[in-house]
Length: 282
Image (cartoon, rainbow, N blue to C red):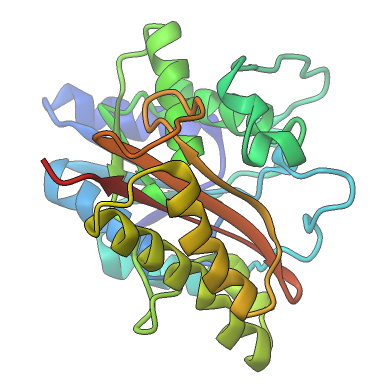
């Protein structure tokens, strides 16, 4: 595996593979790797001749009071894990390499970024969309791999690709969970033992909602009530708990036939998100 720091180095490496007729898979990350990240790398490895993993804690997607400085960073550990999972190139640029002096461009996706995480994190998805579009321009991948845990992010990137006619296939890979159901996240490292136990209520809330749907209670009120009860039992007040269209995040009043249940909550020192695609019986 090569660790490259500059745009020019990455473009040269990709051009060499393209010249031999190979395809390229990209996994954009901010590091602090866990099995969720590694599952994305393995998926790219199974499909492409060249796998590029970006390792860049993107400052433009953090708000002024968020955890940019505290975000976990360990490049040596991440590099070892990335290589073991099948990475060919780890692109680990500096902030100045990604945002050189005078950088003045931002990509904004209307609508999709106004709800859920976008409502409480203004500007977050502008930062995400901009840096991912830059990575697409640098790496020119055939496909890019993202985790379904960040379901809103996946929809935003797909909209960017569609609207700008970018020749990239966006692949959403399943959420990877701990044995007790907690969705894997780099921010889980912020949880102390008590908060870690409480955090499992997010997955239990999704399970309760799924059970309600399986019992024929597919209305939004029933689904959300079932989920909210599990959170309340753990003393968790959600930032949001919403039933949305999985296509455009518009509000829906029932699981008919499918809907995305999305939740965000602060548990201890961590802000956690999770989601579940619910399907009604046919």
